[in-house]
Image 1: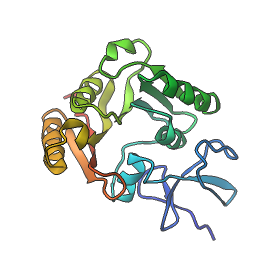
Image 2: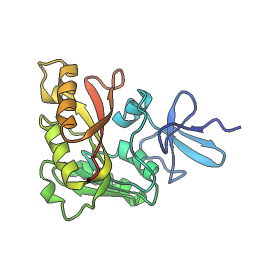
Image 3: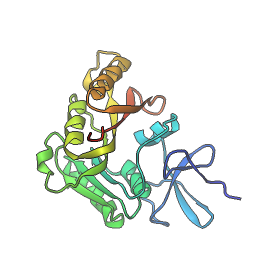
Length: 225
């Protein structure tokens, strides 16, 4: 009998304690993650202490928006831990455009992208989407994990430019990067209100105890009337 079962979140699996993605590259590890074989399939453990997306799912998110075959614009992709799992989720038919301004980080990501052909590293600053406007297609998902004071502004700008109507955006809010003196929950609510002016907020999760002073806000872009 199978121990690994599909989760309520699309393309996520669980064993009652941990969550997993079904690996599109069986036999390959990128971050020393634990793998489990079940019914001739290999699953990679998705650690909520290493990923805000995993923490969001563990905290009870009901819809992360990500589906097989989706095009994802990932802002602040860093070394690629979370994106390697999103790579499993969107599958070989999907695509991730990974934007980061740090050359060393993008170099590390390039090694992963040579194995995972659905990840395209882009050395650019998400504050200036004109730098990659000609390199990125319209996206089903905009995922942002950037520690800057103007993180909400960056997110809105990129969603307006690249996110398809009806598409989903996931913003990992880092309260301490915005204002160290104010209470994180006040900042979260403020950012949520800003986003609600432009989009439909469909989920909101504070990520403690996995990530201190962080929340995830998930939006849906309104369809054109």
